[in-house]
Length: 158
Image (cartoon, rainbow, N blue to C red; front, side):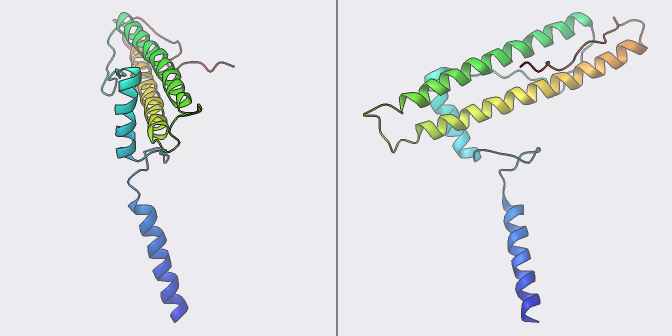
């Protein structure tokens, strides 16, 4: 009986601990806590500027020209995220020199900002891709739309 009670108590602790993690993203993975991410964004903004994230969340594409405009915005954002990441890497590396404070939280905070930026890029690609596929599907059925059967997601390189 005692073993059963202990097993139930432990399963509640384990399940409760897993359930209590507010850090898990929809895809089940998070590098930094939200407060650490916000501190990192503040640190990165001071060193690297503000990353302007496009909002494709509720995007509906109604023409080929509009699709091309949004695709260009997605690609520009991906380029901005890459530059932001390089700036953050330089910031982190600046703390790896002799005489730099070894107890500074800036490198870890900056790494959180880099992770956040990558998440933003991933979400922009997903949201644009969904809208692009929707447009592509509609364009094949609607004679008023220019048919589009190209790629809606970036192709992997390397």
